[in-house]
Image (cartoon, rainbow, N blue to C red; front, side, top):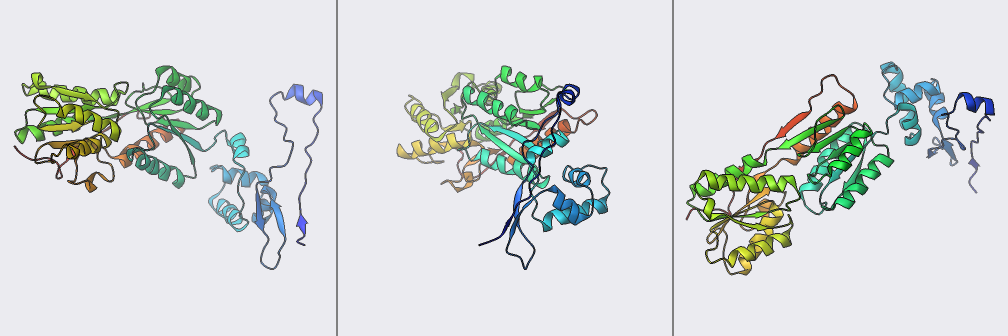
Length: 378
């Protein structure tokens, strides 16, 4: 039978007088035992590891260990290196709740997205999380599924978990919910919809640029009956893309040729919208979709109707998700860099959390057309 050694400590009792003087003092009912580790070679016993063991190994005080864990500038580089070496040798895992109490930071960030099933968002999540991992931070992900009630739940979770900041990478944010974050002084970065302020920054996506390039490309290929499959109209980003399409028609004297079908930014919605367009007395010769999943659904509907892309209908998507170039034919689309968006959102959030002097609060991400094989001249 393996010998077990357990370290037990007892919290000192505080009197009523003490509590009256220190009304906000937190009493711990048990010691912060945070990890089980194997003893050095030659011993088969196990022990409960705590911060005192790390301090003993590094020959420093427990306060120095705590400061090192919390990246305090008060610890000399050589001392910090010795503490980190002890932490690694002992396989010590800091208690994140205790770190929050000491440093005032949870080292957790919130990331709210619209649709985890859309390949656009996992790529964004990965890039954002890569930034966090490099800096020893965790990411809590909330998926709204374009549902306002779920959006409210996501924000509530972020507040309950005491995140250091939140990046809202969706444009269906309810202003009242957004106010809840800013009222609590939680640093927040928005995509498209936010108002900048002391605790908030906004990233504006230039959707119009990409749509205008798509319109010009099709116009140069002699297309005049150009249709648009829109996204959910409760999304500002979807409304912006639709408006850019209408603006493109107007600038070319084609306003009377507008053909718009509503989609839902998903494959099924794209297919249904495309079937409706094909039933028109004069179907379009080209279609721009509000995102790539919509375009892929439209592509399937066109093929099901016995037509071909681009021989019969040219097709353009938006986002340039990872497998847009794998469709047959490869999809011409508008690229919106998820990596650039994630890196920008993370940097903006960090600047707000650090309370930098005169932080940059307004950011812009460009979009551009990527030409592949789904368009041709007529």
